[in-house]
Length: 140
Image 1: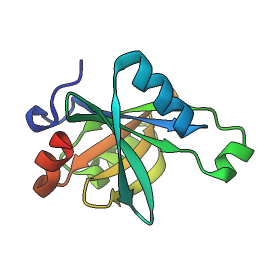
Image 2: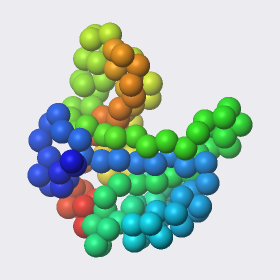
Image 3: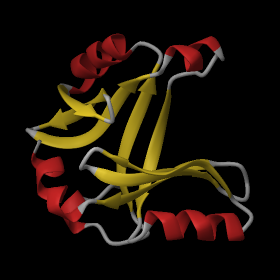
Image 4: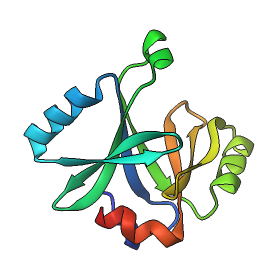
């Protein structure tokens, strides 16, 4: 069970996002199935979509890029684990027989994130919230 972002301690799952082959179709599906609402957010020269339930952000969704689609990347969910320092956590993952798949970067004022592969091949995101924006990310 994911806790509320404002109540998260390091090491707990805190966020999830969907990389979709057809973002509009995914929004229609989840909106109808669960009553989720969606709000576009500019970020890093593009955008992503907050997924909302009862007026609170519960995750995000984004359209896979053309090059990813051409490579056959399927729609997939990524769970994120809260960390105090994303760069340090990514470095330590590599020391423990993991791999850094996507190096740490900032999602425009939301969080610093990275994607790692653990020692058995599973992928998971690392999430370091940008403290000044945690309440805004949660409230939507």
